[in-house]
Image (cartoon, rainbow, N blue to C red; front, side):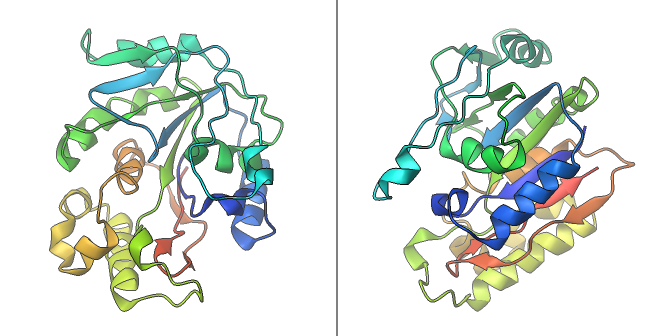
Length: 252
């Protein structure tokens, strides 16, 4: 199965007419049908890594200040306890704990409803452990590569550049945002995992582009599970609201 990182941007992209949503729809139509989808979203952080084992995950509206239409959205994909348990089995006992209550956060459903609008593919999520550094996240993620050979499509959802404090409503993109996005692009093109894990090498722009790590981390998970024979594709490469990189990555 392919592995994807989607720059999800602001939640309104899920219900408005915009070029990103059109790309997601076209991409979904071109992808093979997976047995299940594992989503690693910026919006589920926990102490210790958890996996969702719910049979019927709820649609979580984990945001505020948006129109009622966004809160009315439902993505009724089934869960898959079987693949969640398989994911647990890839690690030492107790390393990944089960969570039966967690639903699908907006980092997951906002893109999945365009990629797989029928909601007929089972979906489960893996959380981001707050206690891990970039290198440890990367090592953990490597174990997930086996899932691709079991028919599981792994999708990371976040943003390479994500600074809400400096959004520009006119859409003007700051130099530091472009600089960091290009740094990551180059690292991806050169399969330079060390550059991706040690973003301080990008200089001062890294602190502005990644003021907190949760939106960047899903990219590391997708990079960690690439296969040697994979081809790298950038599906979108622009910016939303000036400081949200919408760069999306496909390994297939």
